[in-house]
Length: 152
Image (tube, rainbow, N blue to C red; front, side, top):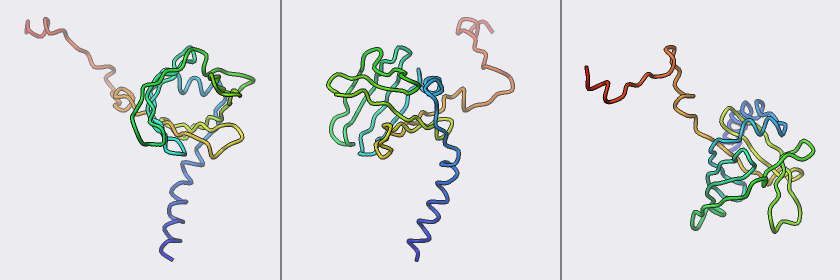
């Protein structure tokens, strides 16, 4: 009985985040992702950190299945691209160009899954920047050079 209660509580806790999730169009996904650094964890344990650049190239790190060495990885320009309204990838060695569903979970998180294979997903989370997490009514912090500070 205790297990059933714990499962129900867990499902109820997950519902608000699932209810607020929204599938993004390719252009919305581009605006949400490009130029930002995300930590990611995939369904089979692979994890790392990466950034998609404006030209569709990708740079970052990867640790396959959550074990072994963390490796630096980079993929060339146009690896990620929009095709027929979907975000797709072109990579040497793959017989197909997989396309992805991009679902925004919250302000800092999205889930990318291979279209048609919902179980094959990675969850990407970025940390809020200091400027995004600190609200100031006074505007940006004004800094003085060390030269000006020494003249007081």
